Image 1 (spheres, rainbow over the protein chains, first blue to last red):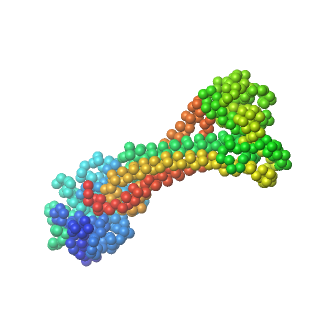
Image 2: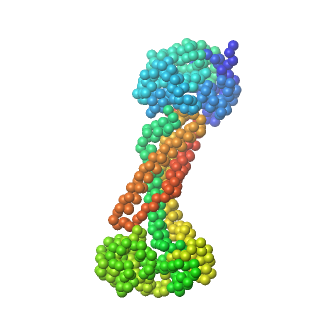
Image 3: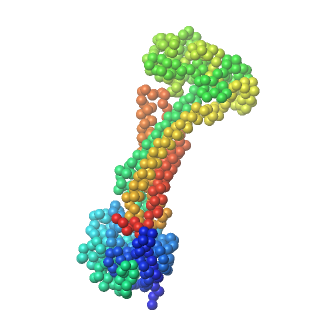
Length: 222
Length: 370
């Protein structure tokens, strides 16, 4: 059995000085190469859990290790975001005035990666996700599906071990959503990347290796 | 893509906002360049009036303005007797009005004064200086604006004089001034037996310390300063310089507020984008570099615009007939360096709070809200 990539024990999180509890004791383990769905309705705590796993937010209580690092430490969070994690959001969160290629270079810029290495990787990834012909287009000039594929491509630029996807199909039509989900699945099957997918859509959750039902800040059953 | 691409993209997408920041810095640069170079030019002209063919200036101790300094004829004679002195040229300053000109500088000097010998005599003869009763000698610029020709009678202050000569000098103040023989000037200004300063040339420059000591021992009411010392210590020059910097810094303060406003709006309008950069691995330091880089780019553009505007204003002033001769812009490398450093510091100071705000953006919180 592979060592767990993510280990969480009794995670708690509340907002508004504790008046709005969101996570109430979540424990989970995610192993390398898994496609895991965090499935639940809006407001169930999926996104918050994903943010904790990615070090975008800090738990109030509980133990957490991601890729062997502690996301509660600033230096470890930096390391996680630069080298180990990729994020995909419901809204693509691309920089509108940059081209597709320039957006893809942002993670490499943060990590000061050599330009030649970055160029080779972005061409390879852009080809794999089907946006090679859009590299010189501005974000506002491409379709919603292409934007989401660009966002996935950006998340993969620094060769992460773990991809955290927060409702990546939420703002897409059904057909485009299927394409994006198929792309995420292929990342797991063909590249061995671990994907944690927060979704409220049952049809996607059911196609994942594991389905964690999140309800009222707890995981109900695996 | 480099950091610069991100910086320029951010400026390009909010052009108007960026232009306001650039204009703020640009006006500060232009104001400082114009004021400082005009002040330095004016100081330079005044220095040259004082220091023609001399090593030391002797004047009344603790006087705030050379126009109020009094050195008696006896003291001038005593200075001439000192063994170190090759020549001592007394000069009396006064201000007169003539025609529609309320302020014209009047120089009272002796016939042998070096500045008369060095001037270009447009009309008249240097040998006649001081020998024509009721005569006045005009700078070429003064002759122009007074509309006076050789031999014409002009009213100056409470008297009437005959134009006995017109001279052209390189110095704007002199060229726009009038010259009287020292005795006539002393009588005209009711300062008989008094000069404002004495320009002293030594036989041997290395004798300066001995000369200075002799002057201060024999004439405790006077002081002797080397030309360089005088330029550094003369209160009026210091006040002018300080005023110029103060006005320029005020202009920069406004520019700095413009940059702060531009950068704050810039940060506020892309909180989500900054959060995304953090998600993509940007450190707080990299975000700060991005914000300071934008401020520095605004400062650089402001410097280019400000220098163009400043040099244009100086050119226009120097070529405006009304000011011709009086305005001499002197731009010194140190002054330019000071302006560049001030502009960059202003922009960076204006970006401190926006950068601080940007680095404190919490990615999760910023991404949660639209």
